[in-house]
Length: 393
Image (cartoon, rainbow, N blue to C red; front, side, top):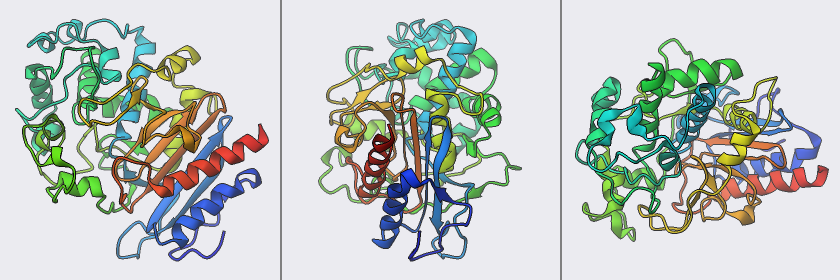
């Protein structure tokens, strides 16, 4: 690896010979001026075969990216939450079709008595808006106000009759269920039962003593829209009465982000290595640890929702808490036909392919310039991964 326009890769970064094409794609992204700092990691058959990082963690270009540098995940935060919830479900024998209200009686209000965890995981519950009590830092810190707002929410469609992206509510719904059963919020559960045993540089709420090396994230197109930029052709984000607006911008306050506060829908933090290692442990053993059983992995990867999303008005397919092919943001033609994962509007991307025993994590700090489609940086890397692994299978 040579010719990095910013700080070069560390000496202990590597790509095995069989995956040299991934290293070249990573370098090309930098050479094209599309990266400031980034990392990519690939696990195959339970071990890392690519672990690369380069560039700068800050816009001033004084702080080099490191192996343990963590970035804000945006939507892939939901992958951490999903892994935690499915781990709990297995540990406690939780029935995904048992009503949420059995553990959280207040949630039954306003037509929600029949909603199940499976409906939430598949984005079918209809509980997608918190515009009656927009998320604020104070509410997130206290947790209880968010749970109360969810209990007071009304489904935007009859539960389980359609699907729509639970952009702001997903992580909070599952966090409250975890808290009701364990006394721990999802961030604390994830830290204790997944991040700790697997040795992950990943957090939902950053502990004060973590010593984490946090990248400065540069604004993506989607984040600019959330902050009030002119939405241009995205007419739904101009009208506060649309479900798209109400489920996204209208459900969030404009408080500045605080990495110490648990935001289980958008505010998770992880390194690329941590994402790949977590997804590897969802599809197989990693150093003797597997997060969920093979049967649960198969259930996770089975389509539960497909067709046009009621919130984003684009075709999406969901398994249990993860995107499946085929959509513009998780396209089959990039090699993802048999994979599951999550894409972030800020450019973060992670997936696993159970059949190939493959897992992938990518974390950049330069925000994505596109919205609603796969970032070119990601496509180059993902396609290189599949070409590489298919040559050795």
